[in-house]
Image (tube, rainbow, N blue to C red; front, side, top):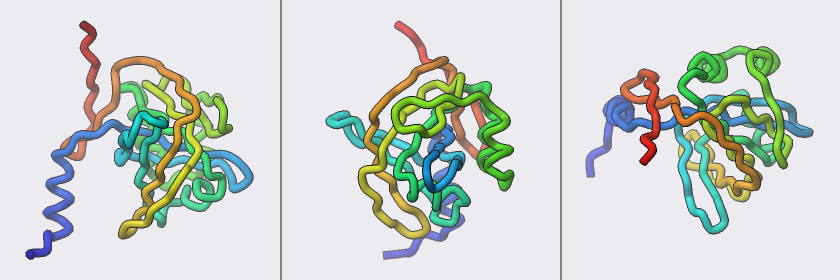
Length: 163
């Protein structure tokens, strides 16, 4: 079987559109957050989603130490926050750029996000450079229906059709 070149794989993945989220945590291991597009539903019985997180991320120690996250799916207007949380800015400055609250776990919930999934991390699997966090959803909060999508190495705005 032939090995797929890393760059070819990355170029192909750029064609897979994905919602953009800021994954946050808070607790004894500290407050942290990072931008993620590798988030998806696992099951609705009991509600579980997964988040792929690079183990080299500055948020890694806090996320795994606190064992809770909030997946804040960004609305179209929150693109600047995506860039901020995806960069090298210190956590204090990242969080100062928005309004936050909490639900059940104490992980920060972003005001105005499309939906927030407040979660306890139930299981972690290591694959290559990343950990796959299986997160049991314990609370939800919904917001606007115009979401931020990342496709073709660029941000796009999409709105859900209502019937």
